[in-house]
Amino acid sequence: MKYLLFIIISIFSTGCDFGGGVVVLEEPIAESTTRVDSFNIRNKEMRELILTEAEKKNVEVWTNENGSIGYYLADGDKVDDIVTYAFAVFWVNN
Image (cartoon, rainbow, N blue to C red; front, top):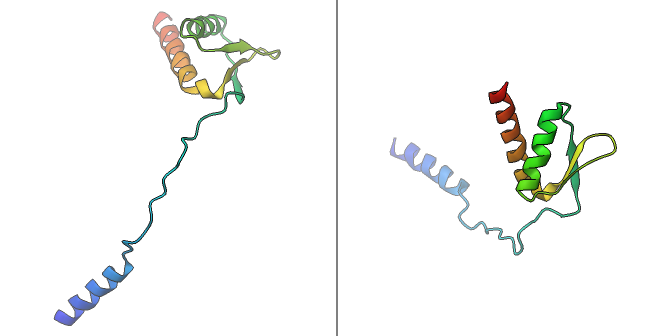
């Protein structure tokens, strides 16, 4: 039984690697300010609310030729917050 325990511990200890290096990024990865995305909102009230809130929060958004709302990917989190807020306001009011 002692030999079995010794063999099991030996197998597990040889499988462990304590000498692995740590990867450290020298520069943080940032979103490019030139990459854009867009989304469609058909409801006119929500669309106006999103555009108004974006203007209040100084987030650059625009209306594309196809009617979609465009934004820079670097502002994606802010746009998500604005759209979530607009959905909540619309849901509460209706």
